[in-house]
Length: 157
Image 1: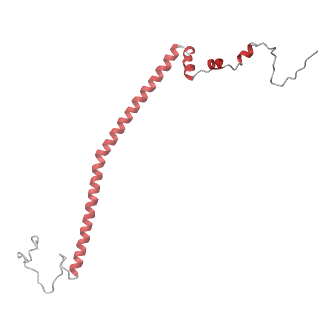
Image 2: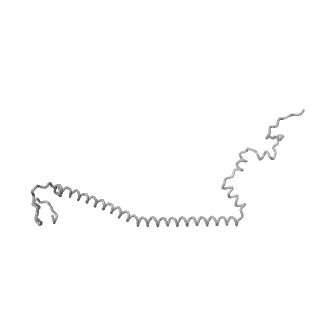
Image 3: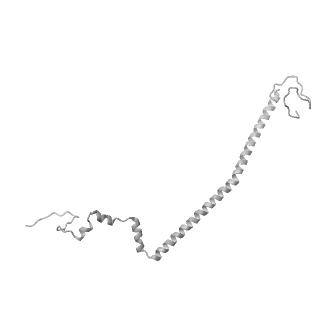
């Protein structure tokens, strides 16, 4: 009698119970999968056998030249940046300090002018410029005489 089996598309099983050569390629044993897994480093090292020696030396020389140019360029840029920043500090910091000092001097001078204007306005209203109330009818002292109060008066007043 004849035995019929239904064949599903895409799946062909022609084995008669014995492992064939194709079956060994698709086995799922752990020992086989460990052998097939290679690291990237192993693959790169395997390229040594494929690429000729003179080509490898040429590539190595080009890479080392590029690296040395990069290092020299970075060192040159670093030295240039150092020179620019230290020069800027030596030139512009004293300049900024002097500008700030001049600004403070201008503020003090404008404050002094405002005080002088206030003093002149007080004198115009009959006030004493030294902050003491004036006494009506008091004559100013002649030059060279001192007041008897014992207050310290600068020369010329």
